[in-house]
Image (tube, rainbow, N blue to C red; front, side, top):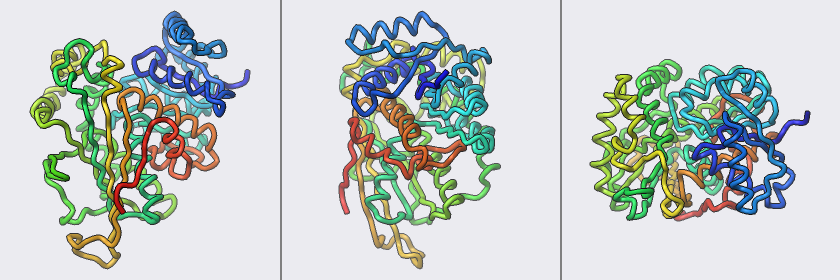
Length: 420
């Protein structure tokens, strides 16, 4: 039996549904009409319902293959991963469901992408599977959604425009939220509860991750000069910024370690920050610190997962945001790369070269995540000759020599040079 090009696992979930819809629309484009693909999940009935919903939107679904797959059933999982060249994993939380899927992909020589933003899980996947994936010539590329394709692609775009390798890149994430979501009543929430459950897993495993990272990489990749250090809150462009809580900074660092070791390329010191409306500082930061410590208790984690609406003041619900709220949510990444002469010891001096670029788009949680995930899978399908042969690789390392940026540009992600 000939393998499918792509298989979406977890297709009937909230994010999986968005991913399938984007893939069906992409399949209408002449460039992608010959791509064969299917959907997989625990319930064959739900998969049939999903295809019916798509056909009612006048989207062709006759060639879409349905595969029943319960991740906890080793036979079904191996059958699913063995039926495709690239598996697109939309299940979650991946701290619970990811490891068995990755191992099955390596066994069946199937490339793999997912949307994980769960840093402990990603790092465990790297430590447990990198050597096996490298030997099997299988690419395992986690975090191909909002985390961390925009930052990885932005860094690729910046380096291409910079015409050199910068010493430092500062990335500023900005999320513009529709005012109706300031008071999240009904479907004016911001995020589906599945994302919240993944965050609870991160809070639980974060101390273990920090210890494991220190053991695996005892020395920092790049020593940060004292002149470039930032306080937790700092002002930039008239706004207050704080460290971005997503995995992007750590994943870029892992990518930089890979290219430094593999290609002897000078590593970049990448830092990421974010800002939100000021009143969100009080809604987000104090509770998250409290949840971080309390999540060490199993009973509290169960409470967080059981009542997402209560513990997030309505910003995360099981219904998820409406399409109107999603499409009115915007994001911008502003990246500034700087380089100094090699003999400079005081980085307070002006850099010899500086460049700022911007990456922007809409609906970061769902359209952008689905688009990034599918374009990442298509890039592996069509440009694997430009990529490493195998291993657990972060996006910035896996895609650095591909046309990922150009393909993202074709699908509503904007890249521009701001200042030279």
